[in-house]
Image 1: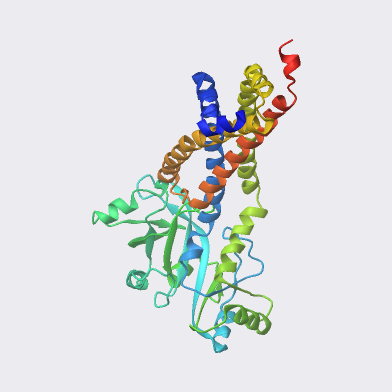
Image 2 (image 1 turned 135 degrees about the vertical axis):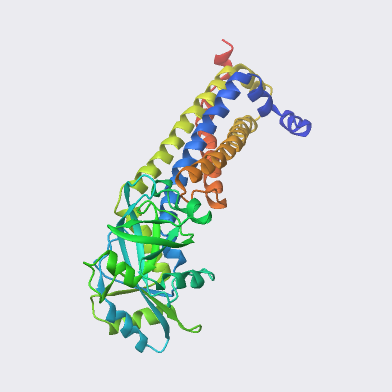
Length: 391
């Protein structure tokens, strides 16, 4: 009966218990917020690494991709015969191909004259390369020798190339010790493997890297007809082509790169471990707060139990405390995460941004953290004996 009266009056007992000691509440919220920020940053860095590693991959105008089976990732590409790509034209569903050279070259900062590794892509300017509809016009600028397109999202260490070009200044520098001129700008984006990118013609690429055999390429882009079954074409080409080339869909090509960073390096594990550590720290903080709260109010809980309130009702009070802490701690953590993501994007130009999936994951982790801590704190209440407390 008393329990029903309490519920009907809707006394915010959980809220009153939390706000009774503002300092303790602030410490709890700060601890949960810290754990949430740590999880946001670690998961954001991890996902940003995976997304950044396939920035260029996503922009390719292709349905299928050919590469050497010896290629490990974008930072370790091996060549294969260009004629393998030409052989795919014999398939009825193949409507176009683009041979691409892919390698890292030394770029000289035109201002400081320091050198830095940059990812260079070489292709035939008359062939489609990127999904950007404006790219075909920019590609025409590469028909002249020693012309390159510079990535505006490259890190600042490559020099004020974008500013100079937009101001109408002639931008010339050296790549692999050869003189080149910036003929235009593109927007690709850096990755953990490449701090900057440039695009040029295959003719210029072979001039910059003469050790590359003219008949060798690192990537082969294949475009299919609108009604083609991508998986069936992959299977057909894999069976007909020699084993010195690997055929995959564009989605598989993207996953191939992500899997390298996920499984072949320790970076993904480190960021996941960091998020787990934040979760554990949050659990300890919330448990200490709730356990202390239950212990401090144990006589009051015991009195209510002696008056006839069910244990289930009192346990619900502790559970609501955990839920309130989760909400109060998540909100500032989410806002701080948004701000820190903006700082990271501005400093590193990596695609680190808040998305709905990560926001929900961190919220449920915080909620689970608080509720599990509340369940552990409830043991103090379950073990309470009203007769012993008032002795």
